[in-house]
Length: 141
Image (cartoon, rainbow, N blue to C red):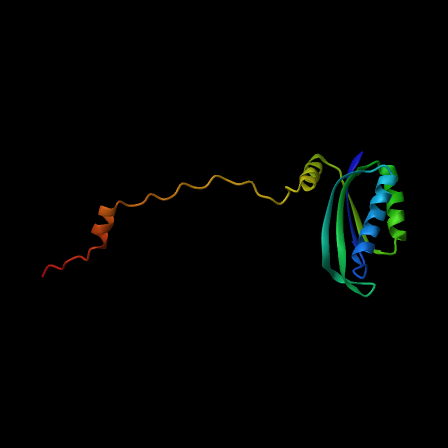
């Protein structure tokens, strides 16, 4: 089984119930074709880069899944016939580094930076030293 990422955009004119129903339809397509869904990311309604079918916005979903390469054509064919899906993009992860990144995306840790230990705080001066440095210097005439 190979690692894939499916991003699809639903029409913004759908109600919340219709949106959920269409999402479940796409999820059903994946499960019917034997895909193992690892993670789902509902990104919400966002502005599109350009107008598609007179829509300026769309509801974005990202699904990370594993599947046999033979079923990908069937999945994409079904997405093309789903009217509420205005755009989709299927990405295949092939090499070891890409698969490691896929696993991080599934866990949600891809963009999170590891916390480094804090640098030691600068040493504070002693009160006596501060008093000496703050006192005005007298001029000798």
